[in-house]
Structures are given as C-alpha cells and as structure tokens.
Length: 333
Ligand SMILES: [Zn+2]
Ligand SMILES: [Zn+2]
Image 1: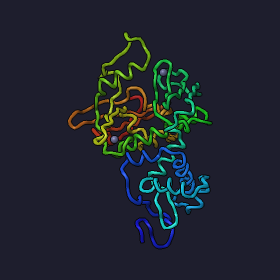
Image 2 (image 1 turned 120 degrees about the vertical axis):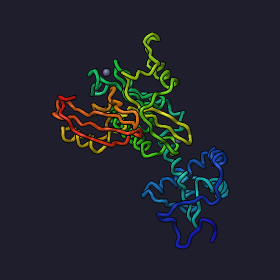
Image 3 (image 1 turned 90 degrees about the vertical axis):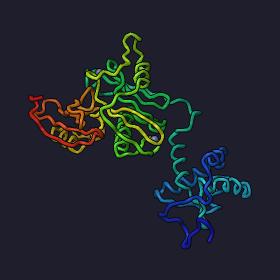
Image 4 (image 1 turned 135 degrees about the vertical axis):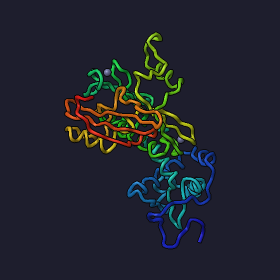
C-alpha cells in the first residue's frame, strides 16, 4: 500500500494528510497556474457537497477542469500533490490547506483585479451615545460603522464576498458576528489572526502608536486630536496579545463580557434579544467599566438598559473573567 492509500477505497470522513509534505514557500510557488487553481476549485466542489473530504478520479477531475491533454493535466495535478491535493488510491482529494485556499479565493480575499467594492449607506439605526443616524462604509476590505459625531463605532475587515449582493444592514450584522467570534476566540486563548497562544489582561493602556493611528484616521483637526489615553474618561481596556505572532489589540472590558450568559439573560428579561449585535448593547459602548481594586484586579461593568428597575453589575478579574455578579436597584447606580 502506497503512502496515503488505504484499504477500502475513498477517504470518507477521515483526515487528509499530504502525500509528501512541501514547505509553504514551495506550495505557494506551485499555485501560479490557472490549471492548478481550477483543479483546486473542482476538488473543492466535491468537499463542499458534504464538508467531507471526498474527491474525484483522474478522468472525472480532468473533465471537470476542462483540460483535454492527459499528459499536460497529469503534470499539473502532480505538482499539487504534497500540498493541496492528496491521492487516495484512484481518488484525488483536496487537503485542508487546499480547502481553506479555495474558500479564500471564493471570498475574494486575494482578488485585486475585480474592482474595489465600495459601499456606503445610512443605517436604520442610531448612535447609542448621541442618537445620530449611523452610517456604514465599506472600502478596501474594511467595514466601518460611524457616527458623524462619535466617529467609529465598529471597524472590522471583511472580504468582498461578505458585501456583494447584500444590504449594508446585513453586512453590519455579519461584521458583528465576526467580531463576536474574534472576541470569544481571543478570550479562549487563541489568536484571531494566527491561532497562536493569546492572553487577555486588564486594565491596560493602548500603545501610543495605536492611539496615534486612531487619531490620524479620525480626520479631525490636529488641534482636537488626543493621543493620550485618558484614565478618567476613556473606556477601561483589556489588552489582547498573541505570544506567537505578536498581534496586539485593545477591547473595552464591557465588550469582553458582552455575551456572558448573565448579560444575555439580563437583556432577555428586559425585552431585548441579544443575537450578536454589539450596536444593540447599550452597556458595550462608551466608557463603561470601573477599576475598583488593583490587587487583586477587580473591574466592575454595569449593564443597565432603558428604564429597567434593576442593573446587572459584573465584577471581572484581570483576565476579564466574571468572578462575581449581582443585580442592584437601578436608582442606586
Ligand atoms: Zn454619536
Ligand atoms: Zn497570533
């Protein structure tokens, strides 16, 4: 039995190891050909049918790609083995690396030729702070939800496929879902960028470079720019840092616990269904969060909606885990 070949035929739902693994630089070099990209897409179609690693025989695959010359097709297919394609007996199957690549190609992540997708729309919702109508702007792969007064409410990256053919309100909803994924992943210890080991630590000050970048992009007059972190007025932040790739970013502690079960239940009890949208969460904006103890670190986040009788108060430790919660009369806050 050859490497990668198993008794009993197809790969079914088992993992797909590469035949003879090749390093990333070699793998990427192999992609520079239309026939190879088309081969990856044809095999991705097979995996998409069931999310299982199913493949095609040589002739089926050659026909799906549309190459007549058997020798020529065989040459290109052979180049992909060991990185993006694996052979099980008579069947060729896309590896996980190939499947990820196919998804990113469909999403337009690598496509700079298709014209820049630019969208701009006023949203049917208002700023949680000042009630001005929010606008959503998508350009160069970035989605920003902005208040004319308070600047950015939400910023995230999205590939073109997330925007095409959708209402901007839906795009914003998707962006929220993505942000939620990323917040949950980093708090679980996985870097949203590289899956490396990440830590979350609060309270933290953002770097000067980060503050300057925010200030530069806000487009306000130089005089008005504040590049100092204001301990009194600004949100209490948690620093999320990856030990492996070094990516670092800062989140308000109120956002870190936005989907804590007690918060979801509190909103539910007050007639608001939390479905992943930070824009609906009054507590997850502004400067919510108070450091009440430094050793050990204890940070209070208050959740209070509209004219509710009670407020929910969460106490967080330095990793933003909730260590205590209580409800208190709203008028005591
Ligand atoms: Zn505003
Ligand atoms: Zn990382």
